[in-house]
Length: 353
Ligand code: ATP
View (cartoon, rainbow, N blue to C red):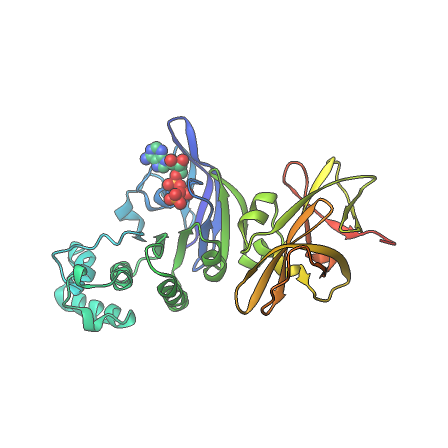
């Protein structure tokens, strides 16, 4: 099912929670809605599900406007952060519930429930009540309950955020393989950029109800269209330095770059992993250590020079002393630049720089 949002708006108390949002999600794609708390992700999902009405624009499923259809008519299944299982029903009964509501005959119902429980590794828990399950198992049951209906569209609202880090990774991998097998269109809401990067075919980054960028995770990561996306996607976050533009040029760490911008200054950004501490690269600079953060297999080092403070990266363990001078290296393609309005600006290494 193709899902299109055409300038969709939803206003609460005069303030748009979703502001003229246009998106096109191809059939069978897994699209992640990513953004900080309050940016309108859940409201967007609820509008698609039909749980929230829209104040402007159109939502289309396979070209057909569904604005006026109620949730039951839209053939979507939603999985929330809180599992909302029926406490008095067993796992199997919880999963069977949507089929009972649709008066699916008993034999078909049982066959489908058995199959879905097997898919999610829940066969042995079929007779348990929700309170006898771990959080991860409960979330699997909620997932099974959505799957059993075989809807064309799945909507997930931060379904993993109550789980610990290891379980999150495990369930993410399961969702990915389920998605590959089912071929259903999926929308997934999260504020966790790592989840968005690892899960989505596409990522839609939202801020204050507006679409900032739509693309594959790698497009969004490699070519953020604005300062907001650059700062939001990637961990540790990109470091930024403000640099004045003089005669169409900006300088960073003694290297000069040409830009086509009328902005009086640019914000230059570089990801920690691209600024190699004691590493190799065509552009080099000597900087001083301000502090470091060891991660065992890698080390992040805060370095400064003149008015630039950046985070650099080293593969492996290192414990540099504060104020120690060290060479950092990067390449011209590792730099991002944004004008005073936050828009991306292309840079190239200045001749003779
Ligand atoms: P979170 O990650 O914290 O869940 P979100 O990105 O999903 O946030 P929404 O829940 O969509 O954000 O909320 C977007 C904005 O709309 C917020 O400012 C929120 O306070 C407001 N909002 C959401 N639902 C309502 C409502 N029913 N009445 C009034 N304001 C609402």
